[in-house]
Length: 116
Image (cartoon, rainbow, N blue to C red):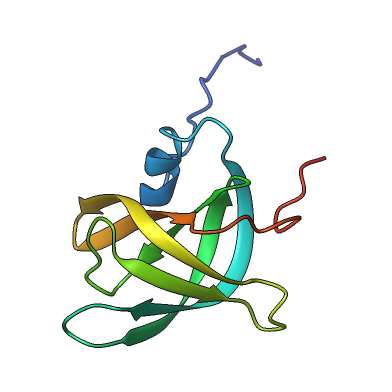
């Protein structure tokens, strides 16, 4: 004998960057591997590979293992250099040893993100 049952679908917990993206209403999910370089700070330059997880026409959001702080200057480059831009940190969110970062381009970067 079959029984009818209902189950509520659980939506997955948003990622750390996804939670930060809620503060950027225009944010669109993307997945763009980049080389991130921290420049112009007293402790010297630091470089890491990371992935832009969300973007707006003016901002990028990603996880970083480099200890970044508000207003630090970053250089963002993708593999083919179609994205090679400077940005400043505008938001940082820490959780369980991870850091979600939002950075705003210092100059207009046309067509870096295309919304359909």
